[in-house]
Amino acid sequence: MKQVLIETIPFSVTPISLTEGLKAPSGNPLVEGILATAEVKNGNGRYYPKELWEREIDKYNQIVKENRATGELDHPDSTIINLKNVSHIIREIWWDGDKVMGKLEILPTVSGNILKALVDNNVQVGVSSRGLGSLKQMSEGTLEVQDDFELLCWDFVSTPSNPGSYMSVIREGLENPIQNPYSKVNMLLSEILCANGTCPII
Image (cartoon, rainbow, N blue to C red; front, top):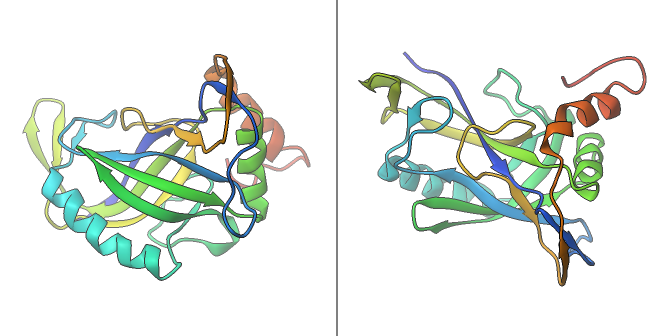
């Protein structure tokens, strides 16, 4: 039976102090990093065969070309991308070994502005795939994602399940390395989202 499958990976806001960032032709900021990793067990105990990701990335590249590869800030338990919560759009997607890489443009929407504020303040956020599919037990503690899997999108979240999925800000120059306070992510998200007495996303 198919279910919504959510996999989160640290899409790292680089642990580096950086100078002026590169921007999209629109002037919006760009980030890049690992979107997914094939052939490894992730933090949710799920295993994705590489051929499954290859098939889905081939299909998703058409959505990228059609300027429709949007995602939300935080995961809804839904197969629908809610346009009022869209924060970014994927501009490029490619393979690097067993890793699916992506370049994302942060949009000037309500959710995109929150995401930009987090990135500007060196907060590490995760990128999380959302898909629909079924699972089969491989071994104790490991579930294999089956061939009926359909990739829907990638969202930005606070906690990753895929190894290494933190996004990096694309910059022109590098300064001194600093350590990002990943432990403060949830606190900062709450402060920003709940500033008016309500928490519309979390």
